[in-house]
Every structure is written in C-alpha cells, then in structure tokens.
Image (cartoon, rainbow, N blue to C red; front, top):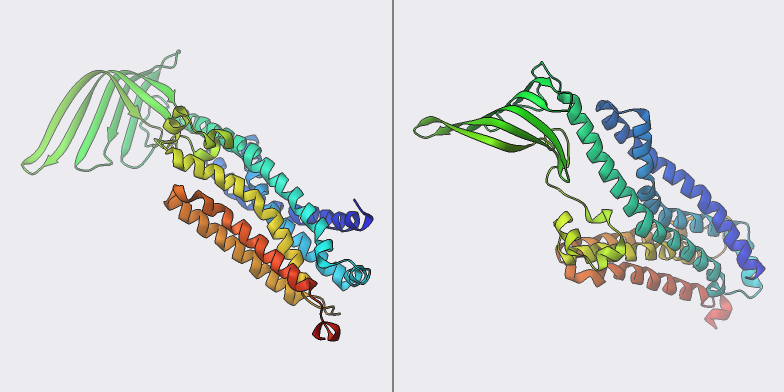
Length: 372
C-alpha cells in the first residue's frame, strides 16, 4: 500500500477508535442502567448484572460501528482540509477517486467487523441472554414458593404451600386465580412439582381438585373437577417467557437461510421470516463502507476555506440520515411481506450511487479553466 494511503488510513483508524469508544460507552451505559434497575429489583447480584450488560455489548457495538465510521471519516476529512493537506495532495495530482481508495478500504474493514458481530457474536450473545433470562425467571419463581404463608405473586392470584419436602415436592398446595372476575378458579393439590420447560416454569399438581365459579346469566354456577395430574403455567406470572418461544435473532445466519423444522417450531416463524432475518444481517455490514464514503465524498465537493467545511458536514449528515431512512423503510416493507427481501439491499446501492455521484462532482474541473 502506498505511503499516502497508509497515512490516510492511519488517521481514519485512530479517529474511528476514539469515536467508537465514546459511542459504545454512551449506548452501553444507557442499556446497563435499565438492566441494573430491573435485575436488582428482582434481588439479583452485581455479577448477574455485569453478565447481562456484557451480553448486550455485541449488539451495541454492531449498531454503533457504522456511525463511528462516518464520524471518523467526516472529522478526518475535515481536519485534512483545514490543515491544507487535501489541497497539497490534489496539487500533487491525486484525484478525489484516488483519495477515496484508503477510505473505501477503511469502510470495508469496518464492514467486516460488523459482519463478524451480526453473523457470529450477536446471535450467540442473544441465545445466551435468553437462556439466562429463563434461569433468572425460575430463580425468582423459587423465591416466591415459600411454605407456611399466603403469597400474592401477581394481582388477583393467591398462593399457599403448607410445606416443602426434602426432595423438592410442594405439599398441600392452594391456588386461587381471580384474574377473570367472571370465572374464578381455585386449585388444591396434595403435592406439586416445579418443572422446567422451554416456555418457562410449570407447576404440576398431583391428586387435586379445581373449582370453577362462573357468572352465568341464570346466576353463579360452581363446577368441580378432580384430577390425578394437572399443569399450571406460572412462567408468565413470575416474568418468564410464557409461550413466546425462541427468537429468530438467537440463531445463526446459515440456519436462517435454510431453516429446518426444529427452528420453525421453536420460533413459531415461517421460512420466509427466517430468510428475511438472514438477509437483514447480510445487508447490515454493507452500510459501513457506504457511511464512510458518504462522509468523505460530501466533504470533497467543497472548495478550500479557512473556516472549514462544516456546511459539507451538514450535507453529509443529511445523506447518512437519508440512507438510514431508506434502510428503515425497506425493513418495514419486508417485515410486512418477507418475499420482498431484495429490497433490503437497495439502501446500500442508493448510498453507493450517492457517493459515486459526489465524487464525480468533486473530480470535475472548477474555476476559470473548467469554465473554458
């Protein structure tokens, strides 16, 4: 790589490290504060809070890196212009197309970082976070299952356990579920077990009876049912995942491109939804070189000024906002109709066309010679 390319690339990487560190810190602290409040209110330790905030870090970094690439390119180009280095380079015969080469290399490098995150680290972190959330929900559930006292885990639900055996069996259990005023249900059982499932903890009642008090037009009616075994879902009551199942974002990109029956059953999604999620991940890293090129090309169209190129910086920000708006619009459109997944790549193509047009304008001769 020529020395001038190494110089520009070194400047961009230094600024990129600074902006990425600042932006990641701001985003991460913002997420950590909400997690801190939620987990500490549930009685979790500081280590659990640290683990959860660390698992959110890959997602935060993948979102911040394109913005950091744009900020580094715009600021670096502005500084090169303010210190007359761009003027010296162009006077030496380097065209805007030639000067854009190290910027493109820088953008591609950032795009590769984002690709590693969205295709590898982010799905792994999300899957681990979902598993740990389920474990935390079960631990919270176990805290509520205290013998010898009436408890109210949620509104209009009353729970009583006489005792807990050494092997974990709940003895002489009573549950009153009055969340539906027109259909109050009371459960009693000699024994009960807490069983872990994919959708959260389930209470299995053994040798018991349920009493339904319904408000019919003719007056209240009582229905009594005796059972040998009955499952009562307490996952949603204590903050578990309920029936939501797994999320498509917890799986790798290759599995989403060719989803199997197990993945579709666990997520409740269609093959088109899985492929849409995969193409969203593939398209996301493409925005990094586009953001870097927009930040560079927009600042190249301005002439030298001792006051800097802040007007061009404003246009560069508007260009990045336009590309992000197109990206959000494409994601919403594909969300309604997954068969339109090729639309996800249009924002990157539009950004690349915008950058090429700006470089073409910057490369045109200006001044009296250009007018002649």
